[in-house]
Length: 89
Image (cartoon, rainbow, N blue to C red; front, side):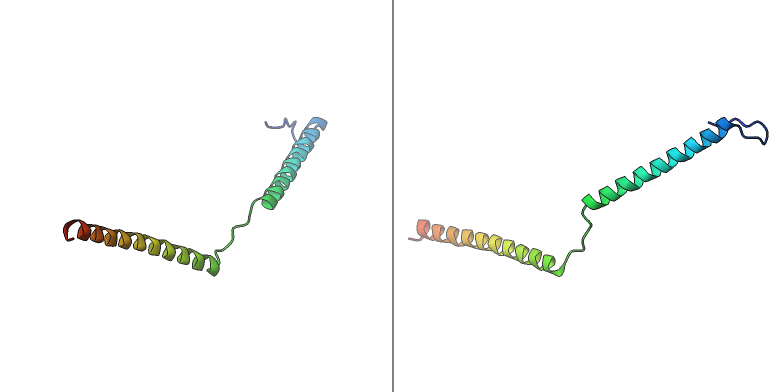
């Protein structure tokens, strides 16, 4: 919305309109900065993973692999013993 201008002379309405627009923009800016400030306080800051985290993940994966290997090897041994018992005595 363009303010009406009568040549180079500004009317009182033009001055009030410009002032209200400037105040509105200033209020919007203050609200935006306040909201950003509040959101930055509540949102967690991203942290860089530590070496301890990598070590714990590595140990966990190794334990899972050992459990899986133990389960498979036990099943193979149990199957072999079952076959021996059934067919060879």
